[in-house]
Length: 375
Image (cartoon, rainbow, N blue to C red; front, side):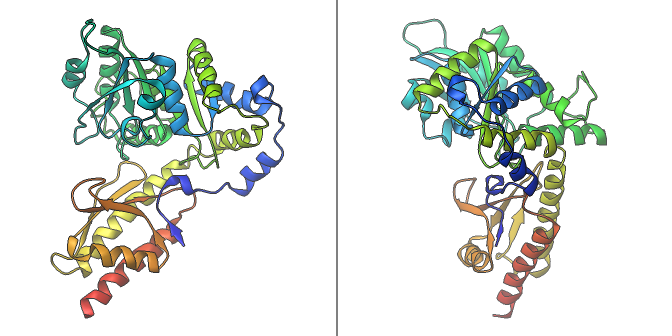
């Protein structure tokens, strides 16, 4: 079975399992689990924040960030396609009585600055109080330009708003920004404030545009469980109280935090391999379809920016194609209308996918078209 459904399916490496088995633990609710404390301190220092909080998932750290920023009856500006609005079960509204103000995303994943400005409510008792602007980077595998993030921050500051980043795949974004700088492709980074290409420094540069950031350890970084919320000490203190209220206080969770520490120490740079394999996968899928598919019975793979490839399947073959993949042990996600019109599959490369797995998947796809052409 080759699993392209998500980078959440990664399994801990042998080295990570060893680190987890050896982790020193305490009681985190009392604040004395040394491994959790180390993870929080190391992540905060790495990304330029005063403090950090370890929690079970990115959904939880996003929610904790929103709850720490906003009171009941206040409002967060979000994208229609942001996870904080669309894919996290309405938590901000259900649990925090926070009003989401969703705005349409542009084709590149951004939200027009003019739309953000227009959505900010005046100081009038008829309206929810606009308190927060939320971004997501990467979003659908796309990287928000550095200049755009600076402009969002400047707008928020000018209007007295805080900023939060859903940075579940923050380091994927940082890897791609560094690659663009190395290649001299600096569009979207016009100001040239820095030329750093190290993903840790780039991630810190991204985080500098936000008051709080949520970072997943269990996606491309390959830890089995956990995410981090980073921010100021007062914000993290509020978030810690919310975590307790939501039932998220953990005890000897240093075993889990050790996986996160190992990921931060060993799995950031290797994300570039996932990006390269996503490009190889995209190129291969398009090549197979162009060579073997009949007119109207093909597919088109978008060019990935990071580790996510969206594949648009012609309606005539959609059902049979999906069934063929599953029968031959190739797993991906996909549905009609979820990512656009028609059937769109999402293929994600990650720690447990190597060149051999990509090649095998391409052979399975080729086999589908070859069999169909004979019928």
